[in-house]
Image 1: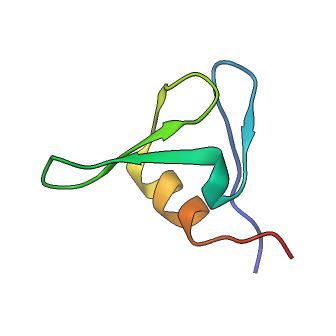
Image 2: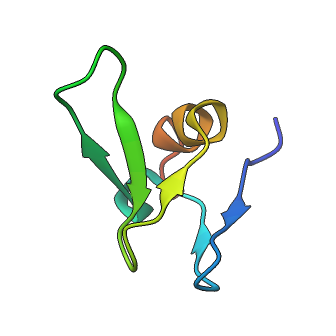
Image 3: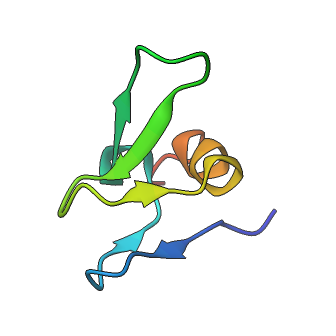
Length: 54
């Protein structure tokens, strides 16, 4: 299985759950970059949130 990654506009490469910050309070959670707080697309963030470093 290939790893999902996302490059944020701040340049951070988001690859693992700890690279994301989950914000609740809405119907579905909003995931944001831990470095700059930019929202990450939901489908990409959900895939990344299930990845753990080996």
